[in-house]
Length: 339
Ligand code: DP6
Image 1: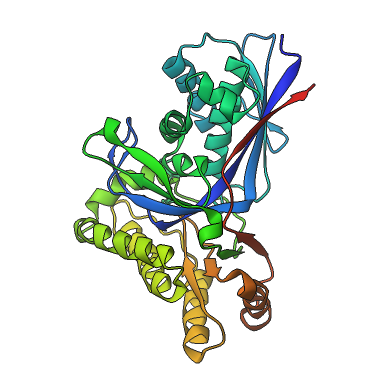
Image 2: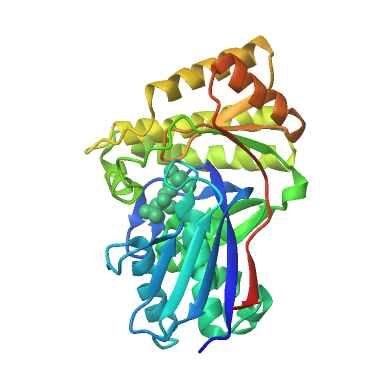
């Protein structure tokens, strides 16, 4: 039995160029390349210990998750066992988010990344990421495995700005860090307009993307937009970055809303917020740009030194009180604790 447990933490990430639509759902082969910023405070912490019991025990935010192959986390544990062939030692897994789950802060990205690290750490008796790499699980392999649980999870294996390339074949996908966090630190003011669970799971909605008449023109334009966003990041140029990331998020939501079946994640308040932010920016109140995940809650990107001013204006002038101020962050961690 394990006398110690492994503790993995993985950050959430916010996509600047979105992963939306898959060429293959089983191999998790995305329709296009995507680029994200890793967050700092919004993380999942997952512990894993070998368990003397017939089945895994899985706890998320203090609640036991019943063993069900349809559950994303249980399904991922089963998949990891098959993929890595390490035997079937059951695990006791406990997972906590530092932010509300399922509200447009990508909890599936950090959650599935942390689960991948914790389970592999427990099975291989690793005490650090370097140990895990020496046992055959380097960052590239970890990203490929995490991706099978949730596509965006592969971008949570690295800090700073991370590029996930689709490649010519499913096996030719790659994930790499474009820039370290210190190269261009940004703040992400997350405006929690709603903490309700989302209505359409994104895995289903990804499939419908191909039915939108806007999807083919979107895919045709992604490479150029990605090149502009990458150049703006390398030049630390928020003004050049901003217009593109807003257009990108709105284009993804236009695809979602014109697919069959359609998925509408935004709320009336989300639209009001976008209009308000653009007007404030035009007036010269501050410089900040909005992006969205598959949810109603705006992520407002701005310079770290302006984050408190932007947050105060969102509270006082727009009237949204529930905010998280986060920053560009580092990648995951893995340690071992005595139980
Ligand atoms: C809108 O990674 O949650 O956040 O691979 O089916 O688990 P699955 O989907 P998921 O999709 C995230 C989409 C997005 C954009 C992004 O993060 O790039």
